[in-house]
Image 1 (cartoon, rainbow, N blue to C red):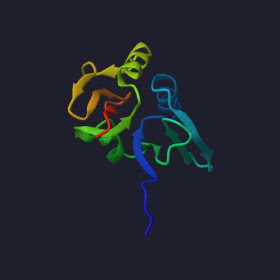
Image 2: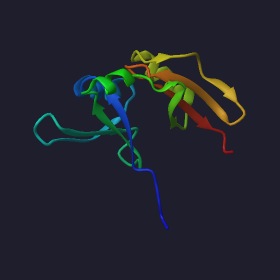
Image 3: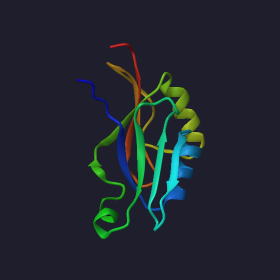
Image 4: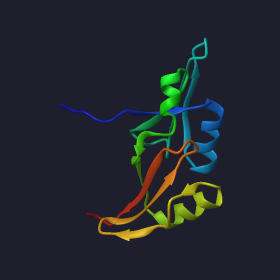
Length: 131
Protein backbone atom coordinates (compact mmCIF):
# COMPACT_ATOMS: atom_id res chain seq x y z
CA UNK A 1 0.00 0.00 0.00
CA UNK A 2 1.29 3.44 -0.90
CA UNK A 3 0.05 6.53 0.94
CA UNK A 4 1.19 10.12 1.25
CA UNK A 5 -0.13 13.41 2.53
CA UNK A 6 -1.63 15.46 -0.28
CA UNK A 7 -3.09 18.72 1.05
CA UNK A 8 -3.40 20.64 4.29
CA UNK A 9 -6.14 23.24 4.67
CA UNK A 10 -5.59 26.70 6.11
CA UNK A 11 -8.50 29.05 6.64
CA UNK A 12 -8.01 32.55 5.23
CA UNK A 13 -9.99 35.76 5.40
CA UNK A 14 -9.63 36.58 1.71
CA UNK A 15 -7.90 34.69 -1.07
CA UNK A 16 -5.93 37.57 -2.55
CA UNK A 17 -4.36 38.74 0.73
CA UNK A 18 -3.41 35.16 1.60
CA UNK A 19 -1.91 34.48 -1.84
CA UNK A 20 0.10 37.69 -1.59
CA UNK A 21 1.39 36.79 1.88
CA UNK A 22 2.45 33.26 0.97
CA UNK A 23 4.10 34.34 -2.29
CA UNK A 24 5.70 37.64 -1.32
CA UNK A 25 6.47 37.16 2.36
CA UNK A 26 7.22 33.42 2.54
CA UNK A 27 8.48 32.94 -1.01
CA UNK A 28 5.98 30.14 -1.74
CA UNK A 29 4.71 29.34 -5.21
CA UNK A 30 1.09 29.56 -6.28
CA UNK A 31 0.41 26.03 -7.52
CA UNK A 32 -3.25 26.28 -8.50
CA UNK A 33 -5.89 28.99 -8.59
CA UNK A 34 -9.07 27.73 -10.19
CA UNK A 35 -12.46 29.43 -9.96
CA UNK A 36 -15.59 27.32 -10.20
CA UNK A 37 -18.15 30.12 -9.95
CA UNK A 38 -20.27 31.13 -7.00
CA UNK A 39 -17.19 32.23 -5.06
CA UNK A 40 -15.76 28.71 -5.03
CA UNK A 41 -12.02 28.53 -5.70
CA UNK A 42 -9.35 25.85 -5.45
CA UNK A 43 -6.19 27.69 -4.40
CA UNK A 44 -3.00 25.88 -3.41
CA UNK A 45 0.46 27.13 -2.44
CA UNK A 46 3.68 25.32 -1.55
CA UNK A 47 7.31 26.14 -0.76
CA UNK A 48 8.16 24.94 -4.29
CA UNK A 49 6.33 23.43 -7.23
CA UNK A 50 7.99 20.05 -6.68
CA UNK A 51 6.50 19.58 -3.18
CA UNK A 52 4.29 16.54 -2.77
CA UNK A 53 2.20 18.35 -0.15
CA UNK A 54 0.52 21.71 -0.72
CA UNK A 55 -1.55 24.08 1.40
CA UNK A 56 -5.14 24.63 0.31
CA UNK A 57 -6.29 28.17 1.09
CA UNK A 58 -9.96 28.06 2.10
CA UNK A 59 -11.92 31.26 2.60
CA UNK A 60 -13.53 31.39 6.04
CA UNK A 61 -17.09 31.92 4.84
CA UNK A 62 -19.04 30.91 7.95
CA UNK A 63 -19.05 32.15 11.54
CA UNK A 64 -17.58 28.82 12.66
CA UNK A 65 -14.66 29.10 10.23
CA UNK A 66 -14.09 32.75 11.11
CA UNK A 67 -13.81 31.80 14.81
CA UNK A 68 -10.95 29.42 13.95
CA UNK A 69 -9.12 31.85 11.66
CA UNK A 70 -5.52 32.07 12.85
CA UNK A 71 -5.87 29.49 15.59
CA UNK A 72 -6.29 26.18 13.83
CA UNK A 73 -3.83 24.61 16.30
CA UNK A 74 -4.53 27.02 19.18
CA UNK A 75 -1.14 28.48 20.19
CA UNK A 76 0.84 25.43 19.04
CA UNK A 77 2.85 25.09 15.83
CA UNK A 78 0.47 24.14 13.04
CA UNK A 79 2.88 23.23 10.24
CA UNK A 80 6.60 22.49 9.91
CA UNK A 81 8.53 23.75 6.90
CA UNK A 82 11.87 22.09 6.17
CA UNK A 83 14.72 24.17 4.77
CA UNK A 84 18.36 23.64 3.91
CA UNK A 85 19.32 26.94 5.62
CA UNK A 86 17.14 28.19 8.46
CA UNK A 87 19.14 31.33 9.19
CA UNK A 88 19.15 32.42 5.52
CA UNK A 89 15.39 31.93 5.23
CA UNK A 90 14.82 33.68 8.55
CA UNK A 91 16.73 36.76 7.35
CA UNK A 92 14.90 36.83 3.99
CA UNK A 93 11.46 36.36 5.50
CA UNK A 94 12.08 38.81 8.33
CA UNK A 95 13.17 41.47 5.82
CA UNK A 96 9.83 40.93 4.04
CA UNK A 97 7.89 41.58 7.26
CA UNK A 98 7.18 38.06 8.53
CA UNK A 99 6.57 38.02 12.31
CA UNK A 100 8.93 35.62 14.13
CA UNK A 101 8.61 34.47 17.74
CA UNK A 102 12.36 34.62 18.34
CA UNK A 103 15.52 34.00 16.41
CA UNK A 104 16.87 30.77 14.90
CA UNK A 105 18.37 28.56 17.57
CA UNK A 106 20.42 25.40 17.63
CA UNK A 107 18.41 22.43 18.85
CA UNK A 108 19.36 18.74 19.06
CA UNK A 109 17.76 18.05 15.63
CA UNK A 110 19.20 21.10 13.84
CA UNK A 111 18.21 24.77 13.71
CA UNK A 112 14.68 26.10 14.10
CA UNK A 113 12.58 29.22 14.53
CA UNK A 114 8.81 29.77 14.82
CA UNK A 115 6.90 32.37 12.80
CA UNK A 116 3.28 33.32 12.23
CA UNK A 117 1.27 33.73 9.08
CA UNK A 118 -0.84 36.82 8.49
CA UNK A 119 -3.62 35.40 10.70
CA UNK A 120 -1.50 34.10 13.59
CA UNK A 121 -1.13 30.41 12.66
CA UNK A 122 2.28 29.24 13.83
CA UNK A 123 4.82 27.56 11.59
CA UNK A 124 8.14 25.97 12.53
CA UNK A 125 11.00 26.60 10.09
CA UNK A 126 13.44 23.71 10.59
CA UNK A 127 16.86 22.85 9.20
CA UNK A 128 17.57 19.24 10.12
CA UNK A 129 21.09 18.18 10.97
CA UNK A 130 20.74 14.74 9.44
CA UNK A 131 19.09 12.87 12.30
